[in-house]
Length: 339
Image 1 (cartoon, rainbow, N blue to C red):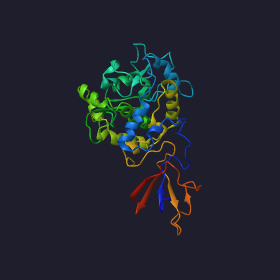
Image 2 (cartoon, helix red, strand yellow; image 1 turned 45 degrees about the horizontal axis):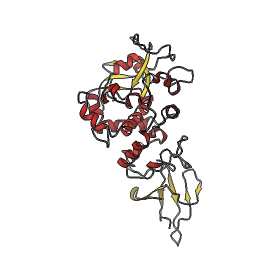
Image 3 (cartoon, rainbow, N blue to C red; image 1 turned 90 degrees about the vertical axis):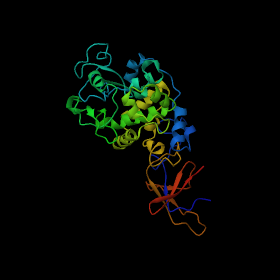
Image 4 (cartoon, rainbow, N blue to C red; image 1 turned 180 degrees about the horizontal axis):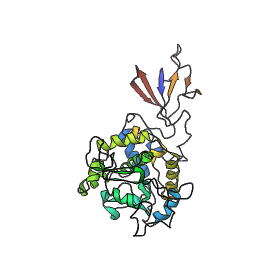
């Protein structure tokens, strides 16, 4: 029998549903179907950890597939004025004393936090490796991401900043990327603490001299991120939604490395792992975080007369994979997952 409901919240990216996963992911995420919160994070870890490992030298060529602008130049997310040519402006151990001179291979999740180049595969994981301006990268060092007034350093035009953290919960030195890319880096960190959740406790106890890592992680597989960092990154992800750049890059990395960033494939997935939807089952092929579906008052036999999606299209039945939330005075009183 169909559930008796007045309001239904269907969790999918839009009113329409995927026959399979989004962005040509097919059944890649199928093993995470129906999972919630910490269990969902672990299920995703089991999916995305397997990949083809890259050599560090391969990254220079990889970037030409993952980080190329429409005009063919290097897509640098640390500088707003650089205009690098692949190969010609590549860092070869000299130069980079002025912004816009050279680009290098940036571990957006600093490699000293996990022990450097002896620790693979994270050292060459393309999902957190980006080509960036050498000078700005050096200014960042291994400081964590945060929000700052930039009293220590500002790149050209104040595009990136370094200084004392102004976000509540941490007062150390932080690096703040431009608003345009804050969501990109937030989803990068969501990926890192998911893909390497088993290593986080070891990093936390083995590299205690890394203040930035200790400020960023909590030392546990779940949630993985410290409370202030998680709150800030959730805000960054919300304010800077998944972009076409990220979608294209995710596909390019998958073509090379054979694993994906689920936080790009499923916008706002972080809400299911850590946020307000962590008690709601994830559906890999009927995914949504928005959209109220109204159900007309049940008839005498207690069957809904009709179900309408947010775009006005009529649904013939409550399909498998839907997460149904019954509301009373705006509060959740019951959740049902259609198996």
